[in-house]
Image (cartoon, rainbow, N blue to C red; front, side):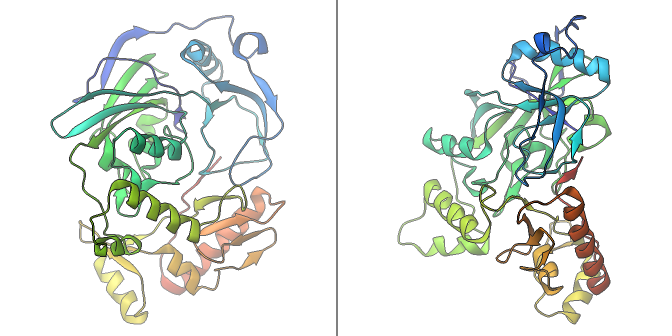
Length: 369
């Protein structure tokens, strides 16, 4: 589990992973007591899938002054569980290990290059609020990623993407705290090893890292990205659309297709779009002429998981207290009172049926704790 933390000011370096001289020593007296760390019991851990989850020890992180305490907790327990918006997780009924809830804020333009504005944003900022703020301040480039739930700190972990843009296209570097070395680092965009809904933060090297902040590189000479079918009609307008027009269209499309987690609890796309070989894609296309697929730069083909799930009869289908949404088969919703067992039962049924019909293996997008 990658750990997400707050913005800590450091020098501007993006060409390498930079370990600074500043270290934070452990406070021996600050472990898990309420007095020193603010740890408390939470009867319901907030999560957008609305699964019941109790945390026996939790801390709301709001500022840099708590970092030494969190280091002490990590040293005492060997790990920390950290949540931002909890919009891409399936939680168990009880979390026995220490939990940190990200609530810190901060947005600052720190520099510019010939082609980009450089803006640092704290990990605890709401992603959608940050997208709105970036447009208001004249820093376009994130409009295709509007209305994605979650926090800024979680975005690079997942390498979020939508409507033709991935986060890796807009990042300069990611700032982390390394619990093993007790130092801050800037991880360059190349060192982040971004892939489809993947990054170094999900793998062994990033297990002891906390995302402190993200430094965005937003284009000074902006161009609309309108390749996605739902956005292509913007090209037919009398005047070329600006970033706000793209933002408005993305929001409208998402609201029309995707349920609001506040109304229908969900974690967005529940499965990743599978990527298969060109040979397998052609075989499937011969058998299923309406197959929805997207050629990739590496010669492989990405298949629309929602289409596969729909063809197996799961769009709008309910299984106990959970269901696949009636407008988007890729989204699982909690109809009320669902437990983690209900979620996993429907997920496994879908994976089994898609594999049986298409020979394609689906992978869950949210992480299971």
